[in-house]
Length: 519
Image 1 (cartoon, rainbow, N blue to C red):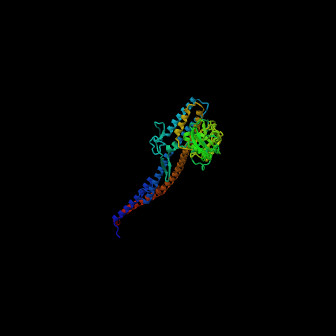
Image 2 (spheres, rainbow, N blue to C red):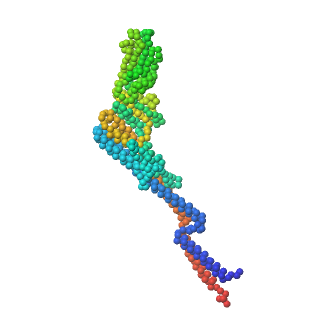
Image 3 (cartoon, rainbow, N blue to C red):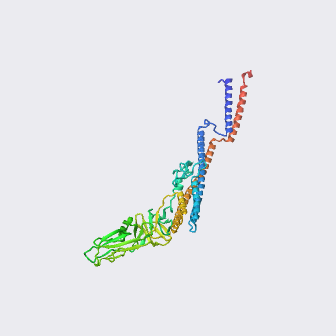
């Protein structure tokens, strides 16, 4: 084969250029510290690098989200702590204001501080974060959540939404709580039921907030504890007809209204329950209710009243001198013209007996009243202190939601009410009892939300640790694929330099060869 000088020159030159290209690439790798400089170097490796870098960027965003969530939740946690301090102070003021030795002016001063605390609570409920977004407005975070309308009612302007941020590939965390959940959805009373006095009570009875003793037995009905008067009612009604020429008749009236009539040819009521039934059918006209408990019949004014209850039993249709008689249900001995009617008056007095009536009029419990003694029925119990009067009543109803602002407002009104007599003093004690029960529920609600916030902060801590570990793994994997092994690269650089020098020297030597040198 014939090799020309031009071919030898071209081959040598290409060899040097190839060695220079290799050396240049190695120098660029060392300068960049990267093993792969372009997708052409290693397409699959570059694809792996891009995937790893994307995962690193996403994880970095998760960490930024976690930092934002931590900021919002830390601000909320501090805010809730301040709210609890306000509620705790107002609770203290309520107990202070219920001191019987205080004057109206003293209570007015306490009420003034409660008003200031109410304004402070409103300001805390309208708190904003560093970006000017409201903490408790739900999704409507640019709208002030709470305001006072012209009627004096506190209005929630936000919604029930709750924002979440992604802090991990499969983990989200709520960065706030709606004002409806924190401030408006607070159960009154003890959280299950509310105990309150009737507005017209005349005695000094004060009801305890009560508690649930058997959740399975509690049916969430509404009950009324009433203090009726024991009567002399008994069975049966008896006619004594001394003459066959007349027809004896009996009538029963309550407070002047006839509630029942029957003659000797009819069928008289045969039970106390039936007698109570006809009395209660006429309650709208008489203002009196009847109760049957423990084998006795009791009467009470349908609403608290000091008015006596007058029962009138009358006989009609008899003949004078014939020995006609009627023994009434309430013990009246009626006879002819000498005693055709009798009034039995049941006057007001301190309560001696109680009955518990459900919303359908059924008696659920009853017994002699003892101050402070437990009154238990259907899985719940309460107690009443003081001296209720006959016909006084107390309601036990399922708890309803009541916002914190209304709770504090109720206390202000109670403290500002002038004490003119014992009835006002009892009303204040009952109002403070209700307030303490309500404010305890409000504080419990705040504590529940704080616990949730604390759990979220703990979740953020845990997820940030997981994200950091994952980032470290990604960086190691990226380093394995992308980063240059400097020892190997420098060794390779030296080898390539030697190879280039050898190629250059051999090129010079070969290019110096010529047949004319041997002629």
